[in-house]
Length: 616
Image (tube, rainbow, N blue to C red):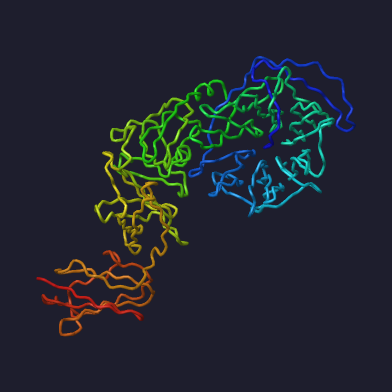
């Protein structure tokens, strides 16, 4: 929940929670049970994982479902909050046009997200994401509706706020208020119908609450605490495990997990400035987000595990990256296998480059890749480019499978930033055809250096680096791109791009290329070799399909030979496997004399003539 309410939780471990039951139907107070002393033993252990999306520096994960999907909030290019879903690694953002902000706080197993938007008049309206579209849902006759949870059958819970900023809870289309409370906030409902939230009593004291399916309500009180600030009970799963967060005066906000018959356990992402945990799934996985010293916000998952695994993955290591290009190794093995994509998200990098030591070439990855890229391994060096200084927290275990590669780059600090000593050219091939296994070659026309890569799923990333940290590209350089198909045949016109200052900042040139396999115009090219003896190849390209022939004439205009090629599709006929072949013989099969000859390409819509030379 996002309201500024004054609630407190004591931040010491020996806590006492008083449970007070109320009759929900009649508001009749029941006898207060004897306070229960929370057990001092705690047998739950957790490991920490980060949730990142390359190119996204603000990822506020607020909810999850049992399929490992997430929803929450991020920022658009204008800095406004917009809702997102993260389904199978794909981030999709949603917003209501002209709204001040659009936010998600609930996600069910059917993929429905729920939250609210704030309009230009500062009025809140509930929204439900259904089949990719935002549907407005407002509590009947309410001025402001804010949805914070959604059940599997689409029932929503949340708060309504009147013109006097009085807050009441709702469940579906029914008001829900804790008896005798002046304010009630409703955050979550689990599969069995248990509801959790917070409320303010007549003495302006703040409590968490649980409403059980039988209608009874249990207070969550923390006695012996003065000057409270706030307490939010955000989620409860089917096992009755509760997630809440609290802030004491002069302290940071802290997040806790509370298991039945146990004491609250603070969970904080190691090394973070602050951690907010908001949801828990059926398996006990807790989701939320944490803030870094460099100002970035990452999503996170806190997973229950064994004591042995918790201890193994409890190591923490900090890496500081300077603006621009950096080379470093990953110091710890994470709980989930790391890839180029996850490293880019963690570091906030525009590119990730690895050395393929076996083939002695560099391979690159960028955020527009359709896959996760290469695996990140221990003992290997990686090059990343970051637009701003970055702080990285590595949480995990000591590597047990370090790769020792003599040619691999070693981690280096304080690298010279005035030179662009690593660079990636990446892009997509536009079209319906699958261009996988085509090959791209990128030539710097100033330096004549070449980098290359294979196309996979119509994406490519050609990378280069100078491990002596000398510049590999400069502003104004012209990079020429050539494509060959799976047979090594020319597959496109040559593309040329000029390097800009922004390209150097990102160590990246991104392009979208259309017209692969389709020449801009028909052309007859110079034969090769030329001069020749006794045979030569005549390359050409067709922008229109049709019958093709090539005629050869002597200097007097006499016809020497006609090469009837037949019907040809549009395309490039450049290499020896596709170009026209002439063996230097005339129509009678006799070898022609040395000298100058002319050859002409004929199609129904195009003709062109060039000169060749035979030397004997």
